[in-house]
Length: 157
Image (cartoon, rainbow, N blue to C red; front, top):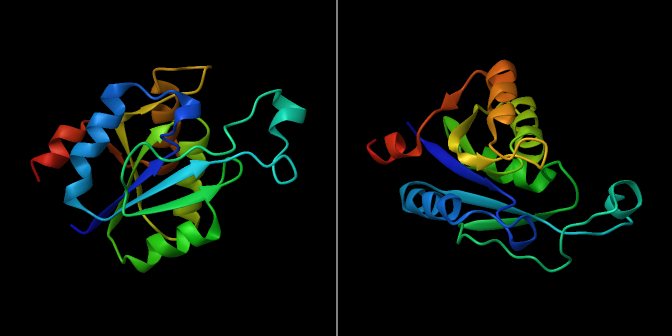
């Protein structure tokens, strides 16, 4: 099966746990990879005005993906989606930060683009509402169905 890895917002502003970064790094050599980094631009997305918080203005990805796309807000950019479509993969494995918001938003964008998004359940962290990520995985299963429970199974082939 041809697949790509999409890494959502694994960057300093979100203080990812070491186990998340290490797990993602183990998958990087196996397939094409794309990472997103959320940067703050109040003129584009009103984080400070509405949430009194914003990601760092100069964060970089903490994982060395093949391609990195900058985004402002929850959604994937059209360029990110176009790049993933051009990879001509059977599915896009999704992992990263904020399983119940940014990761879920990526799932909707991929689904709407005709791709098959699959969340990696043990390589996500949730928002402050549910840091475990369980809520995001439950929502993902409901909306898209495809869940890879353990990243180690992906290493085995």
